[in-house]
Length: 433
Image (cartoon, rainbow, N blue to C red):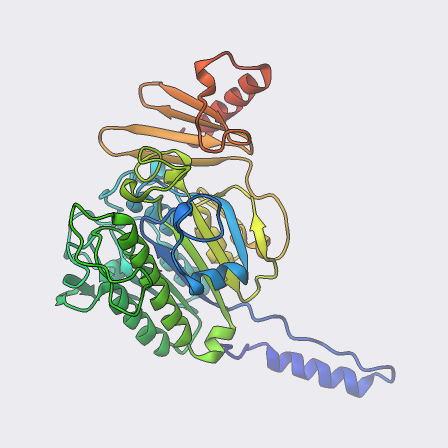
């Protein structure tokens, strides 16, 4: 989609004037690049680096040609930190704030309606220039099945209000405040809704597509959408990994179907962001991660998830090692759609990384509070510190110990390590004041 710019007629007048009054070589004035790209943010649920190609973690990978294409055509971000469960990650993206500021730090916590969402911010700052939709998993309103996310400033919402489904083939769809029982496979239905919405748009759009796949329950996706063989119904005696991989492959199949059904002009002007909301579930964790260092933990396997970006205006390819927070998607998306917001709240835009190598952050931060554990973590380019509310701490050198096997605080710190610890503690005070 390339809407006509109001200022283009003025540019044409200037060109005509210059051509008619100048006896020298004509001056060519090129209109500015389109500043209104369409944007597709895809969030996969319970999706760690060991669950996708492009990373060394994990040895058994799903067949994901469509996600692979997003990665291969753009940038792989290797150091993205989110939260260890889905609700606080989604909250941090949609508000640009850490859970410390919103009090959304655990699964099922409730986002206050007084918070300004990313979609509302885009609407306010662009005078309604963009159409916005959130299709899929919400899980920002606790157990309130009657909430309508459109009341948070989103033009259109359809999807799953809860954190998970009991059955991928039987679930409650909430659409613009109305609930209905669905018997379509949820990953396919969310894709259908996305295709329908995109085809209805007449102006630039921002679609947040939040699949609940590959979150449990483990199940058998529709035949023809995965390559894991003839899976039988899942039982507690089954190996869960093929079912988990099948759900990922089926999601990838639907992503391909969505991209194939986006109109050509809209697709030419499209930026795609794909990200995992937290690490892999413990039942299917792969080495070098373990069941105690993935989802629900502040270890790397719980908070360092995949993110790939490609499409309109993405000039770089390969791997970028910048420290990126989930909160940073707020300012980044705002800047992509034309709002001059390099930094807001706890969010720093990394839009510049789409075209050039630079440094965005010196520190990353994440946190969790599930009622039993209240802890937080911070890192710089080398060291990572984890502290809980009781003052217990762990510290790791991620450059030499990327999977956190050697807690440096069990021994005597070197002067460099002691200085790093003090620096990290100081930055924690700045964040949590």
